[in-house]
Length: 168
Image 1 (cartoon, rainbow, N blue to C red):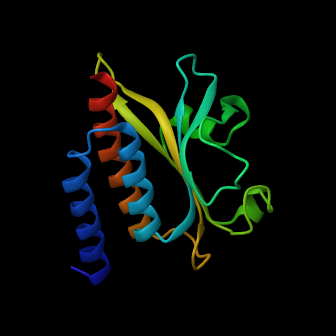
Image 2: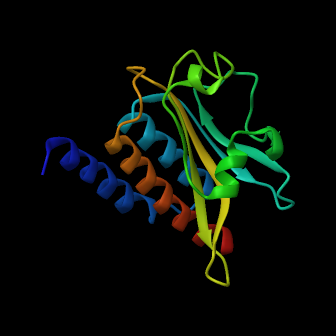
């Protein structure tokens, strides 16, 4: 096993050990952001949940976003890049914002990634409840396969913890 994979496994294992002991939804968000910030080395991360009417993404927690954008900010799903993730259930990975037509719209950095938060509904289908957005990777390089594996595992386990807390 490579050193990178061992480090990734340790990050994921540590996160799993912590997440299911967290009692409060806000603390789940904090743990997700702290873990991703330190492991993926992104300075700009946000977690957004879909409102009950499935019209808006509501910003729940963030780091590195402009000070005038606050928790609770709403973004219309139809005008959001997250809408692609919500419809497909698959992450949106942009390794060159310039090629994607996002020049400095969101960030001076080049790589951007949106991962879904999924929960199982009563008829056993995956239901997207929100997304995690990451950009401003410290070295301004594309997200590696190991980065994506860490993000995927953190989002999957955070989704399980959120499902448990939101249903209780």
